[in-house]
Image 1 (cartoon, rainbow, N blue to C red):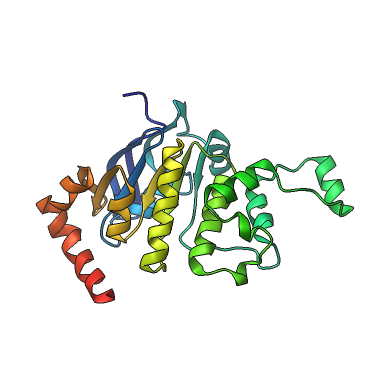
Image 2: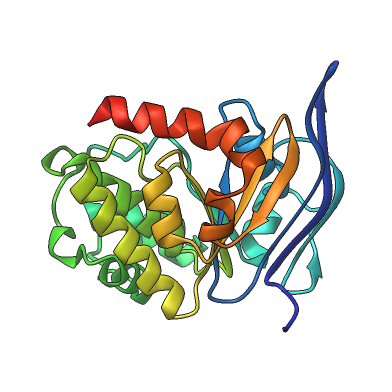
Length: 255
C-alpha cells in the first residue's frame, strides 16, 4: 500500500495532570474514510485538535509526506489538512455560496479593492465544486436560516472542502441529525471518498460511522484499544465493554 495521506504517530497530549492522549497512531490513505470513536472524554476531538495544530502535543504529523509537526494551524491548512467543527457557525447575513467562499478566498490587494467597490464576482470553481459534491448547489443563494440542520451541516463540510484539503477531519458531522439526514450525509461522504477525498471522521452515531468508514479506530482513556474493519470492531470484547454497549443503549433510548 502507498504512503498514507495523513500519518500521525505517537500523538500524546497532556492537560496538567491528565493524559488526554497516549501514543496514538492513526493513518488515513487516499480515498479512505477512517472513523475515530470512543466514549465521551476518550480524546477524539483532542486528537483532531492536535493534528490540526490547535493544542500542543508530542509526536509527529505528516500529510502527503510533508512534515507538519512544527507547523501552525494555518500552515497545516495550506499543506492540505482541513477540518470541520462540532458547532456549525455560518454567517447569517451571507448566502450559502458566500459562506463557502470564505474558506476558498485568498485576498489580494486587487480583490480587496474590487470588493470595496462592490463589483459583482461570480462564485469560484472551488465553491461551485464543493456545493455540487455535497448535492446542495440548489441552495447557493439561500440564507442559513432557510436551511434544515442537515443542510447546514453539509454547508459546513462544503466550506471545508472549498479549501481543497488533501485530508478532511470531520468532528461529529452527524450530531443533531435524524436518521434520514444521517443516511444522506453518509452517502455524500462515501461519494466524496470514491472520488479520492481522504477523511478522518468522529461521530457518536455508530450506524453512521460503520456504514460510512473503511476503517475504524477506537479510543478509550486516550489510548487505542482496537482498530480494524466495522465487523471486527463490533465484535471486539474490549470495544463492547468500553463503548459499544453504552452507545447501543443510548441509541435504543433515542428510538
